[in-house]
Image (cartoon, rainbow, N blue to C red; front, side, top):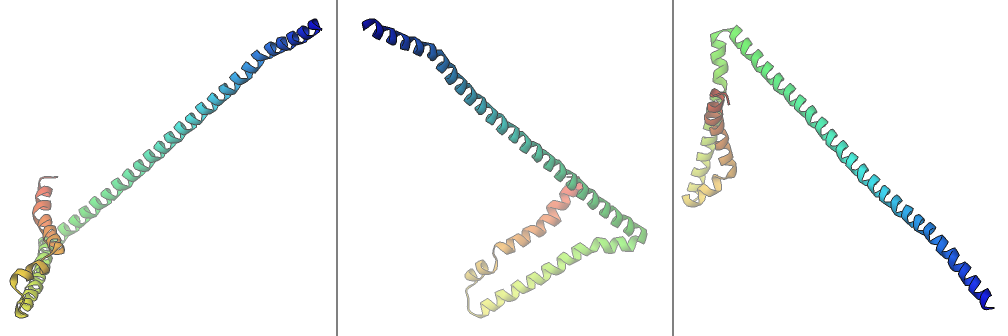
Length: 163
């Protein structure tokens, strides 16, 4: 009986040891497939990022082309206006050149008159001058003044220098 028990156990152990390499191959193939899947996912992410970058480049090139076209249109319009004024003669050029300064003087004059009237009304109402100025001269007023100074001093100076 001992032989029979030893033979069966030996056969079973031999079969198990024969199956162990097959089980290891199966586990190795499973790990290999998992690794390949992970690498494929990473490659897909990389390709998606490249595609997004390429689309961004195309969009930027398109926007640059549109901007160049708009600037060319502005230059053409200014050149046409200049040519038209030159063709009309010297008085038309002088009239055209005086429009912006006259509009600026007119609007700033009206603005000054309105502010002066508001200050006078507040003074007549008995409000101390120290309280009037902060309430009548605020951020919007400074923005307006800065815009006028920017245009007439800074912008024109830079334009004369070709900047």
